Length: 339
Ligand SMILES: [Zn+2]
Ligand SMILES: [Zn+2]
Image 1 (cartoon, helix red, strand yellow):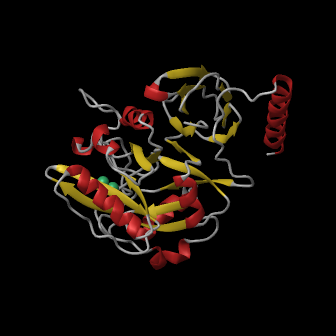
Image 2 (cartoon, protein in one colour):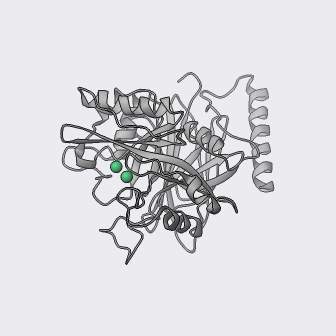
Image 3 (spheres, helix red, strand yellow):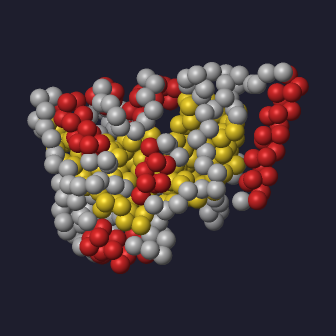
């Protein structure tokens, strides 16, 4: 931490020197969304229990996550608000249950599933005369219950295209990785994968953040790739404390990264510089790719601290770290001043 603080200080000094020498700031500055004194909290926002179609009780599921190093969990049963108060004894010791629900609707043969995080009350699924209208109605229903919506597995049953998602308003979070084996994260045929969909939305100027979730259903028996097990995708949120309000604020501000296994020490944004500090695991090797609008590759790094320096106008820059086992961390897009 001390090293990082010093590092931040030296970055600020370097910027000051640059400004004083040239009389102007470098072209293009990132909008800083940092949070001084904050900590990183790891959590999963999408999991099922026997309150809907999961194979284990809320108590069993919450305990699984608590025992596996998660700081927070949202139980998101289909059209059921599984009240954390019923298993309140699991709260504490650095673990927090946040109320949630998978608001589960449909339009014709398409699935319209929208998670509601930190809901005040049960949200009934809504329907509309169009697909986009149905997605919007359920996003709105979550907002009306003071919840934070995230749109789930758009490629499940090939339900929602980038064009559909571009017409929906008032959401910030989109599942770009879902651990269920039948949701087509990577796309196929002429349908883009979720990362490509994300870049399409970002390129249109939308400020959307990509989340990774388990959507776990199976906690019993042997775990395997065809089963819907926990531990596959999560978010790590930078927040001032482990409270539902702070976590929600961090998520909606994009102050987090999504992961399927790669861990980060920190993400530092200062001036025109974006740094991704990777936590080394064993002898794994890492490749970090910095991406801009339309998914263009802006730079690549193989260092433990990957650094990107803005040199021209880019509306947004995001980073993707892949380890030598194929696990990923997605750093949220950082937007630039004036973009
Ligand atoms: Zn679903
Ligand atoms: Zn689900």
